[in-house]
Amino acid sequence: MANMDDLDYQLLALLRTDGRRSVSDLAKDLGVARATVRGRLERLVETGEILGFTAVLRDDWRDLPIRAVTLVEIAGRNTEPATRILGAMTEVRAIHSTNGKWDLVLDIATRDLAAFDDVLNRIRLIEGIANTETNLLLNTRKSPVGAANHYADLRS
Image (tube, rainbow, N blue to C red; front, side, top):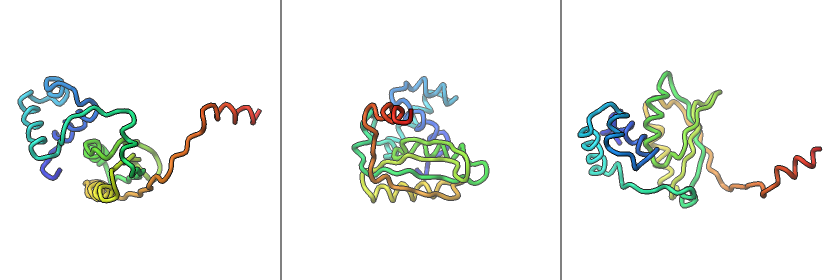
């Protein structure tokens, strides 16, 4: 990602939202010529930044066993540029803005701990990111169906 510029990050963010968008639509949203978008896409594929185009299914996150929440503190007015870069990272599944000490909350998923370590290092190298705190998600518990109504009945 070292040789990418702001336009590349914007293009990747748009593709992550909808990978089936036409070159014409992408060019219109980015305010550039179709040839520019086509050239950028070809370069991103050739350099391996884009590994392929696929459908993302609702349960894809379950295929990535290492999951975490990363809290991010942004220095100065760098939220938008940092968010664009984070939005292009495939391991970052969601970016939430928040208040208080932390500016962003990231949902991260990777295939193994080595990939997780790599993504954390890349996040920390993004210009404008002042501090991070990460918590690995060890287990997910869900209330059984109808439990919310059951607890509401107990309170009344």
